Length: 357
Ligand code: PHE
Image (cartoon, rainbow, N blue to C red; front, side):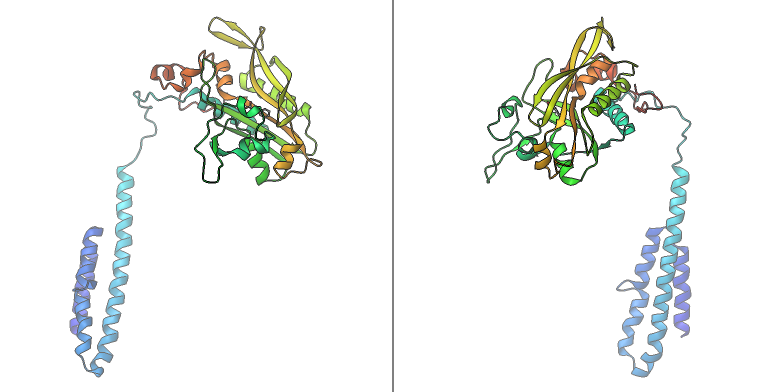
């Protein structure tokens, strides 16, 4: 009895005196470890008479419980002290200026990406995504481009190696497969944009093998071509930050829209300056149209009930236009001097309220 009470006082003193978690762990092992003092006492129980064991057993178990409890409490206290010390040591002075040597900039494409999301977000569009490596079905077949269709050749597709079942994945040649994925995943009304990377085996001053598009898709029971034109006009005014834009809607053809239109934007070049909404130069920035009934059917949407429009816009193109960047290839050369010249401050996030550019 006496012996156990003395031991308990010693143990509790050792626990209370442990200055950090390491010391506490050492104290725990000294008591409850295989060769610890309490463990040794417990071992003695086996050699006792049943009578003795009846009184000693509960005493020892009580001791073990109290010691365990004390260890836990001490550990919590030590953790809290350590956290307080860290918080006190790692204070940040938020009033300090940004370090002058921080020279990183936001790439114009990323900046335009964020601008576009802001504008369409304000118009009620959500952002949807899809994979870069696509199934032929989403990239072509479901978009009413069956095997042997000439449009497949025009897409200069990067194919992946043939798989055991004879199918081949592709690097998506446009963001349109996200239309299919979205319609298969949710019922109308649908109102999404899908910005992202696209790939075609094509390279010259105005084409790079990797480029960026933004897809738009609106599906409900009443949306028509007039809504498409209005949305695109509102977008262009907001994006180019002008009150009036010159837009040219040209009848065109895509297998996945009917009717289809391509849209050019009018601009004037004045030396290195580009003025949107003036002059008589035109740049094609997007393809669009009313979603083809076959595309709706392929995606599980009832074409007798639902209709809507889609568009696909070249993000790099509108970035070049807005920021007067002459050569597309420079976008992807990772030239630091170019990035410092055309890049944006990381602190200038585009918002509609605060201004886009
Ligand atoms: N996917 C087409 C392209 O890459 C653009 C487009 C999208 C056209 C949606 C119509 C509707 O050229």
